[in-house]
Length: 138
Image: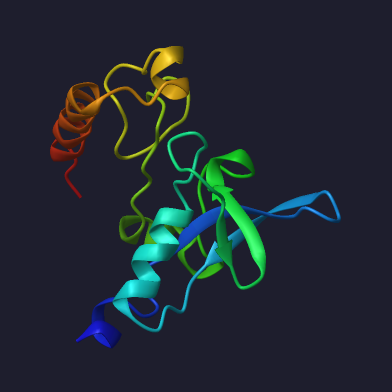
């Protein structure tokens, strides 16, 4: 069943880099072989320090949240007008700043991006995110 739903249907963007070469670039993660690899790729695509304690590592590259190098990672085959309904863009900023399908109604405060907060604070943020995502219709 994983092949049917996960392979060639999910893509995650990361900002990848080599520490030794001081080179950073956008990398599209795809062609996952199992659920564990897919979840790890998703986690790599949202890594922002200090929320995560370390960088991700994908096929030899260190990686962090993909928004550093590109707002969205859309494979070439889905960029055509006929495939626009097959792409869901999720943003961390309101639609006033970056156009997306799922976005916060109101931007988070600067401290919310920098300070992870305690469990109570995080549950409030998660609740806001779920409510914003529930508004999405495709």
